[in-house]
Length: 297
Image 1 (cartoon, one colour):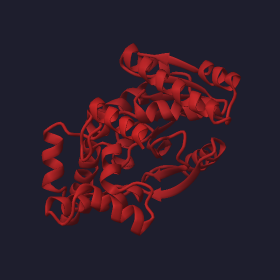
Image 2 (cartoon, one colour):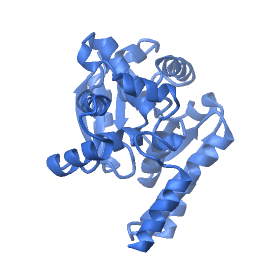
Image 3 (cartoon, rainbow, N blue to C red):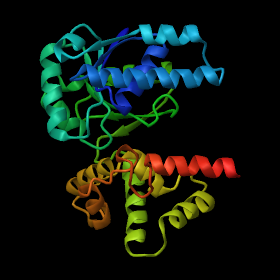
Image 4 (cartoon, rainbow, N blue to C red):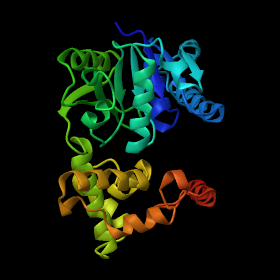
């Protein structure tokens, strides 16, 4: 039975995953390379819990209990050695993930389930660097993790039926809706989503329409809650590029080739919300302008 869980990475996805598990009664070891990163991650968790309090979804006592269940570690070996499940949520970089799984595999018992939150990288390839590939599985949470219901549960070539069943049940226990998919580049979510985002960028690149016009068509015409260019900013343009490259390399199909505009924007450091500018402007001056317009209206 899973009682203790380690989450590797205190960034956007990692702190969200830790939040969800802790809120549902699990003991969580949150691991990152620095206390600065851990402090930032815990600050995000605290603010997200405060929003839930403001909406009447949880009490102040619930928040304190959730926070108390999260322990922080900067040494990976210490954070993973006694848990039943490890969820890796590091940057979407194959080299980094393979190195992390080698270290985790060496530090954990043979019974520990090793999961990755990768959004596109092969589970089978990651599992191949471990001694027990049958214990490796994908748990692709959606962002923002505390709100989004879906978890893509990705079965690698060697993932056992037992591990799949445990992770499907665990996902349901934390109020998520697990959906089983097989291990191919991009899985299902990004195999469908990223070509749409890439086509929206291509349409902008070819001057078919402007940023707001493209997003408006998709929001009002297709009932999407967020336009594809705004969504790309929210995901991170560097992440979008990385996923498209994984699919292009995996399928050798030109339909997955990233648009030159996306490549140039990433090279220029315009990554979306995280950098303050992408297809939209997220700078402090722009925020102040939006607030001013709200008061004028």
